[in-house]
Image (cartoon, rainbow, N blue to C red; front, top):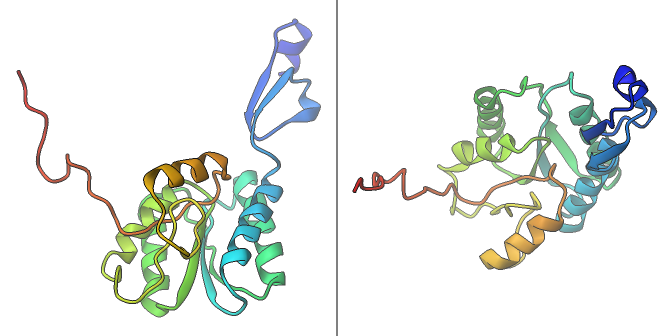
Length: 187
């Protein structure tokens, strides 16, 4: 990057900022720790002190994931929520699914879930599908906290567009029309 800026080439950083790099522009999210704190505040607003929260980390080698987890833990532990999980899944959805499945097999009393990456939302439906709709807390798709009331698709979209990308969770697994065997017809 130093060579590019010295040659007069504008450098744009994405995702996480590198302010001392000489970059011309940053396009992305706030500091990872602050994103984790925001997710933690959302969780504590919706879950009373005491219940367990399932945490999925991602990679312990990724500064963004580590920072998000640190910020999330700062807020939730201080608020009295018990956090379970957080094993490094190496950014592999299969391992994330196995970790979620193992945690849910031990304790069905989770009040919410937090995942540092978008694929964590995909790993939980696979783990929750046998328990969905049986008196367990349903989880909002964008806030990773129990729902207070059903949301319309438009309300979910508005909420998702204003939320941090680190907060992902699920309701019941959804099947697309393609998964039901109705592939598009050739003309």
